[in-house]
Amino acid sequence: MPKYKEKLETAQRRMEEAKAKMEKEKDAAQTATQEVTDLLSWADTFDEANAETKHMIIARLVERIEINHDYEVEIKFRISVEQYMRIAA
Image 1 (tube, rainbow, N blue to C red):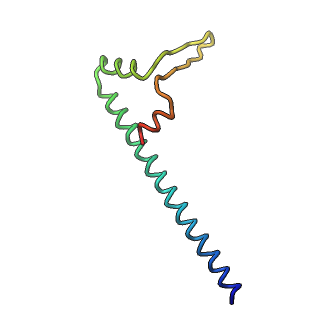
Image 2 (image 1 turned 45 degrees about the vertical axis):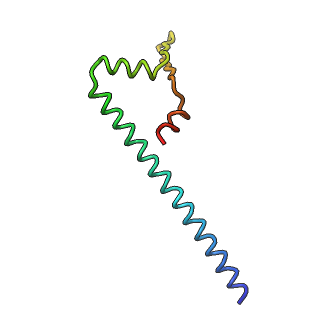
Image 3 (image 1 turned 90 degrees about the horizontal axis):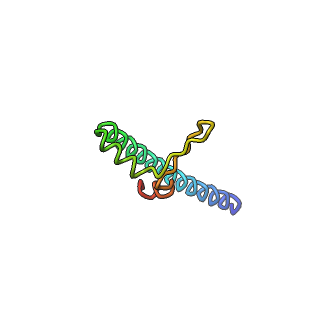
């Protein structure tokens, strides 16, 4: 009997760990979905803005744009990915 009791406790512990992991992944998925929704709404707002407003938005987001001799484009943003993730959360 003790052998089966130990197996049952192990199985229950694994089940609880799996439930916790599933909840964590569910929360992460909801966060990602919200970030995509926010990004799409910002994109819609940008698309609907007039040229002057678009220029102002880009000027606030982009520090500089570099074009190399091989036509390689590098965009330096004023905000990092980490900062964006904290703002979006």
